[in-house]
Length: 434
Image (cartoon, rainbow, N blue to C red; front, side, top):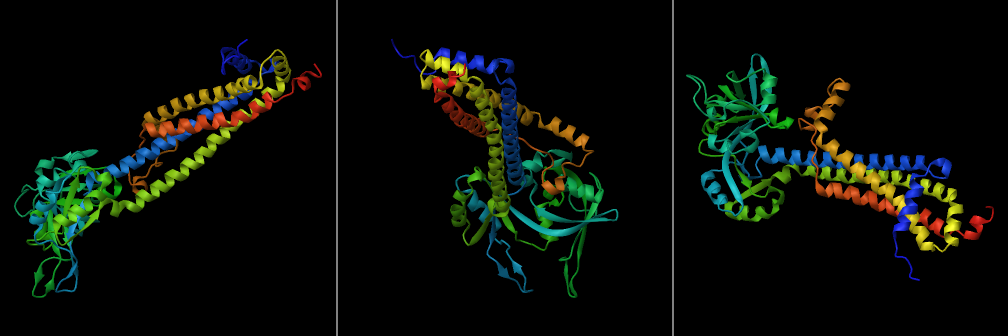
């Protein structure tokens, strides 16, 4: 007589009968449901957290790369006649042309930048001004196609009237802080203004807002103002020079590969990549990701431990059945597999339900978040603190698979111990008092 193959049909049949048996019949249906719900909720929490984590990093990096240069190329530091450190590029056109020839570089533009005070209707705000040619500004992704926009970007740099400078673009936070809108005129006040025989006097210029953008990062929307490049050279006393050349590359996630070619192409220059400026944030996010995964993995482990308690109760209730099954010829391996199937079935069902709930949470996170914000009375998400204007979620296959593998792996491992206890039960002892 041939030995039945492992995981034969009768083993699944016995396991199914035990799982669906009522407590009055020696089953543990209540513990089964508790284990199932616990695993489902734990897997849901893990997937939801991983999705929010991935979404946050994606949005964070996306807004950095969409509104800032991937690489800034600037000159070596020099001390001017006034004793100040300067990094101005005199041959900025040549540097820009040289770096455009580097493989993978998509765009390079000369930029003038400075910090000034903006004023409108008695309200003041410190802002960062970037001087950029209109055709270059149109290639900044999150400025050309922002979350929200007012006005027309094509009007940037055009004359707005006698006695006024060209039209400018401002962030939505700047406009809100100043109480200004499209068509309003604001004053930019720089302490390093016109040089006169009596010293340097503040420069005050008036510009009309023709475009308001919101990229989704509070620190950009709240501080950023764009001036046409030629106007910025005059305003900041940068006649014939630029502060830096901003470079966009095809693969910003692997920015290190461009460092040496850009340095060689630019000559006697220095570079500053987006990872240099935001590396601390990215490292903090990575550390937080690892810690959250470990904490939620412990949560999944706790949920799977309910399987152990349920199976121990099941083995105790079914000791008579185990003795009979062993007596009629079932091997220790068959008994082990029966109870292993019982425990792993709970783990598989709970994991599948958790995956469905976690994916649904990530997909419909906006209405869920809106409901939570409504119940809490608003103010749950403050972009001035979290830098991004909404709570993002991004489902990635790797995150879902990691949650599934973790949950199933723990479910299978913890099931082995009570299953072995059932398999090693002595049938004589099991039937002694029957």
